[in-house]
Image (cartoon, rainbow, N blue to C red; front, side):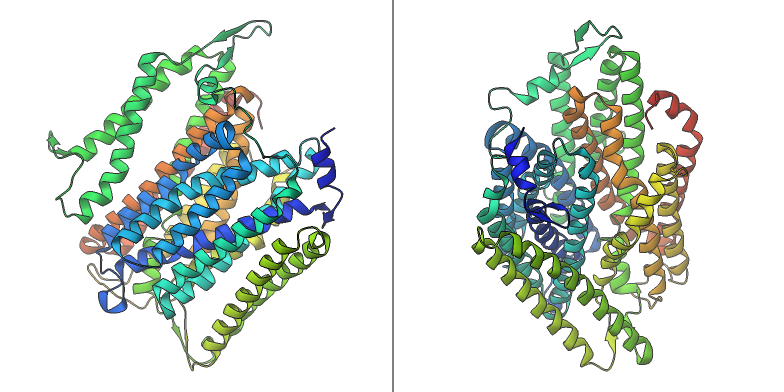
Length: 591
């Protein structure tokens, strides 16, 4: 019996260990800071010097944003490795939170050095924080699998609550008061999350305290994976050869250089280029990423046939889902880039008369009701843990006093005005709001007899993504080619976030579940790494797609860009549906 787990379950909040809600609030403030800063980044870079921004062309901002979000996901592999092999999960969470606090503080200074240093600190901080806080939940619920789904649902609400409040409040402060205020407040609440977790981590006992594999190199263990041959008594080794390891290194270096080269070459206007050559009329950057992609395909061809038939087929199914997922995130992540600019420059965000009053009331309810519910959860945790961990509770309570003050001040400021001007970042809030509202309905769907198979979930998700892009394409239809401003109705953005969120609920929550079902346990860490690599590629492609929107909008109109993404989404939706019989066969009974 694990006494740490049993002790955790003695003090319960809403039927779950109090420790779960410690993680809930830690993650909530991390997501608050991450999404709060992210909502402002592209607007800060593209705002004019008079508006205290950097006055960058949108292509530059999209390029650096795509690189940043891509590196956030790539860094999780580094953070996960160090947690498992060197420092332990809990120390990794603390280090990650500390690095992110420094990152946000640096960005509040707004000089080039500190902005770039801040982004670098945020990348490494996320890498240490993101994969490891969920590992603590997994450890907490060992032997209590029946409670795990509920635990992750509660935790997921913390994720979305943080994103919701971060975008709402940091976005408002950044746009209405000053960029430094938005970046700085994000850092303050990341610090609250760090202190709260540090002072109460004793509640977890020995869970996550030490590295799991201090005497074993997990990387070697993964690279030297055992493979079943079909005979339960016989296991063959399928290690990576020296040549394969060299090819992995080469592909990784080329990929990383390509990710960095995109913003570096654009921002320096060609002065600094990591691939200063052309080949057959193609830029060196294009040649490099094509070579990296071909090396990756060659590695798959070399390795996958060596696995037993069932493992091989299931890995092929995972690769198909990863391929579709790349494009899902590349299109979905237009939210903080091209869609935010659409909201800022092409949407009529000034509401007058009754429309303005309705928005103020709705915005107030959207702010106060979630804050009230979360504060009630805080009170329940306070009652269970204050006697033993009073300083953690005091800091957490102080953070909520400040957040309530900012929220009430913001709402009061808006009610003093005759009209309502919606911040451009506000529309991103809708994603979290829709998730909190719709997640229970989708959960019921997945548990019903109408639960679609994996292919159809991806097909439905891509279809909804395409529908959202079709909606915004129609809304942008009246914008002339080359136009820098317009006054499109807000309804189009409200609808696009609705459809995109429904698409996300079909793909994102179930994606890692299918990877875990399809891949043998001994290979799970390696395949999760591959999966996060696919997500990272999607994030970078989101920046590439957004950057291309400028040239397309100049020549053909912004609507053409959104129609292009619509056709890509619908095409992959049809492909997923058509390939259902093939993928079903490859999955060998996994549902």
